[in-house]
Structure formats: structure tokens, C-alpha cells
Amino acid sequence: MEIITTNLEGVLIMEPKVFEDARGYFFESFSQREFDAKVAPILGHTIHFVQDNESKSSYGVMRGLHYQRMPYTQSKLVRVVQGTVLDVAVDIRHGSATFGQHVAVELSEANHRQFFVPRGFAHGFAVLSDTAVFQYKCDNFYHPEADAGISIQDETLGIDWRIPVADALLSEKDLKHARLADAVRDFDINDKLY
Image (cartoon, rainbow, N blue to C red):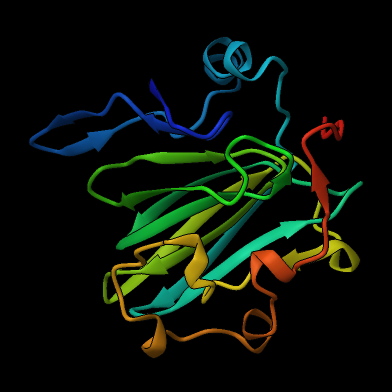
């Protein structure tokens, strides 16, 4: 697995080693041993995933930008097993040198890339293919009372979603999220998130 660092601290792109032949392909989608050996030194701590989730969406669906409030914050390791999405992480840690900045990466069944989104970042994606099956690991259990988000329609974030946001299919919940400038200050750069 190759680890690609980004301009946001702790946000990582992972490219697995894929073995292909006439029969198809094989790769390790997750190894705790390799994750600990390669990612923990970058993060400065280990991650223990406790929950796996999967969603299926059609073209134009946008989900996000989601996060959970303290003390139930989550890191996520995300990937696409069918189709293609544009996946985005936004730094929402007030006081951070990269507050409000984002990283966007295309994840697809063809490139097998994975995206690590640490605590203190909002996460969302847009479906670019006819359908997409999206899987993600979380290092904390979901708590509905801690559910929060930033508006995916916040133009000040400068995200090119690669589909018209005006035509996107959003949930009622996601339509109600505030812009980053108007959102509750849930994270500060000095918060101990782990």
C-alpha cells in the first residue's frame, strides 16, 4: 500500500498493491498491521476501526459534508467498490492553518484508492457514475445525537463537485446544514480529538 499525503494534516490517500491476471484481480483492502505500520507514524497515534458502513447511490447524489461532534468524533477510511465518486474532506478545526480548506479525490472501482479522513474534518461525496457503492470504516460508533454537518452547497469552500450542485440530489437533512462561516464551532485546533 502506498500512502500519499495531502495538504491537509492527517488526510491521506491510499493506493493498494493490486495483483491482476487473466482471472481478475486481488488486493488487501485493509490490514490493521499495515495500517499501523504505515499510517500511525504519520498520524502520531493508532486507529482502531469499530464499524463498517455501506451505501448505494445513483448519479448526482451528494452526501455530506458530515461529521460527529465530540466526544463521538470519527475518523473514516472510505472506498468505492462499484462506480465512481468525488470524495472530499474539509478541515473544520477552528484555528488550524488549513481551516476551511479541502482535499478532493476521485475514488472508483477501477483505481481502488482509499481516502482517510481524520477527526476534525467534515466528509462528503458526489456520485459521478450511474450508481456507486461506497464503503467506509469508522473508528467510533455512530451516535445520532452527535450528528452534524456543513452545507455541501457552501460556495465559499471552493469545491468543484464535478456535477452541478443545483441539480444534485440531497437529503432533507443535508439541505439544512449551515455554511461553514455560520456553523457551530465544534472543533478547535487545540482540542484533543484522540
